[in-house]
Length: 352
Image (cartoon, rainbow, N blue to C red; front, side, top):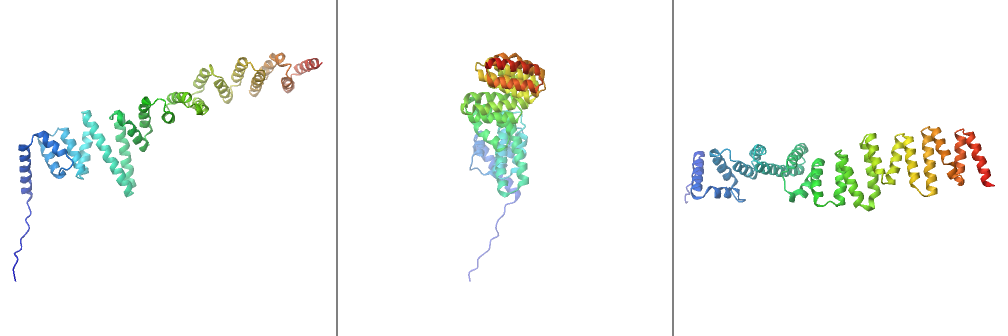
């Protein structure tokens, strides 16, 4: 029988590994310029474990080199040494160098996003919520400090929607609208975001643009604008705005009337009705506005003023049967018997 001699496998000692690495590093340094070495370290197919050892060795001689630190962070994350990578990024995100801060924050966001989807697949919701909060914090830093380029704005806007970050959604949407000022969808979104953020002046500004551009939905935007004015501002602020709008618009004059009635300002509402009365040239419309003014005064229990307004235009409407019936009922209801008798005589004479 042939005997086979067994051989014990050789295992290198820790000392031999270190000596081997140092020798390898020395050879690299002798054969390659520093710039070429860093280029090799950054390549995709590099041995991550070896590059980490190399970078750590270089940092002993240049501990403040943030480029090396950032590279070490990247390689650590690729080598699944995330704890080391995260610690380095945490330092670099507060760097005095803007370029380093941008790169570190962008990388931190990308890694956190990867972790988020991984945890989502694993259904680890407690950790998932923490990572989501971290994503929101990093994203806010990126946008607040303008750590982005114009070409990335649309993608960042999508990220803001994903993060439910309405503050930064609004910031980015304003940037988008600079290049697409007539985009109805963007203007509508900008209006809703401004309203949610209590930026009511901005919300009205976007509504004014929608009123001009989105002709088919003009009435809807008018109604939205009125709603904001009466809900978001004090009485005097809202009154001032509505009066300014009403100077050149009967639509807003009617809205001003509604506003006054809602706030039980019946005298002011009646005054606006009579302003509309003076502007109108249509007899039937004038009669409607006049009777509305009288009825509004009565609603506020201003009966003397209602009767005064009725008598003032009695002669003007005397030939109109509907107006005569309205006046006679009014005088009787307000116990103006003298006025009722006088009107009755005029009606009899008129019928003859």
